[in-house]
Length: 257
View (cartoon, one colour):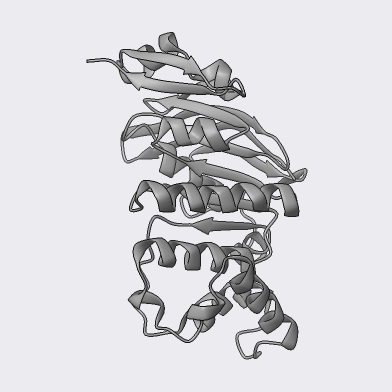
C-alpha cells in the first residue's frame, strides 16, 4: 500500500508551509524525509494523517483519496509514532499499548476483545517489552518509551507507519536499535514506512529511498546514493562534506570544517 501525494499545499495563515508537494512513496519500503529545520517535514506527516487540513491537493493510499475520510477509518490504515507523547498518564505499558486497538472497536461502549489483547501481547513481545508490561509507561527510559510508542502504533495494525523524528531524544545505540526494528517490520509485515529523520548517516543506513525538502518544497527523491551527494548536501544544507561509500555502496557523510 503506497502513498501518492498530488499538488498538496498547506499554509499557516498567510505563510505558505507546503508548496505543491507531489510524491509517489513506494509500498513496502522505508522512506526517509530529510531537510533543514522548519522546511515542513513534520507538517507534511500531519497532512497525511489529517491532523492538519491542507489548502488543496490529494493524499491517495491504496487508490483511496483520504481527503475528508473519517479519522477512525484512517487510523485503521495509518499510524504515527510521534516524537513524544503528550498523554500524561499512569497507565501501565500494556494498557497504554492496548489503546492502539481503539480505532477497531465498534463503539466507545465496547470492551477490548481477546483478539485485541492478543495483538497487544504479540507486539509487546516483538519489541522486547513484555518484561515492562506492568510498569507505568512514563517511568521508562527514553529509548524504552519510544519502543512503547512504536508498539502502540503497530497495535493499530497499520498498512502505513509514519514516524516523526523517532530518534531525536535517543543516543546513537538506541537510535540504531529502533530504526533496525522498524526496518525489520517493513520487511516482515510489508508495511510502508515514512520517517522524518535528521541524522543523514542513519537515513542512508536504513532507508530504501529518501525525500529531500527545503523551504516547503520537495527538491529530490531517490535512493540514498542518488540523494546524499556533496552537491545536494551543499544546496540543501549549505554543508561542505565529503561523501564516501561503504562496502555495500551506501553513502556516508563526513562534514568538513
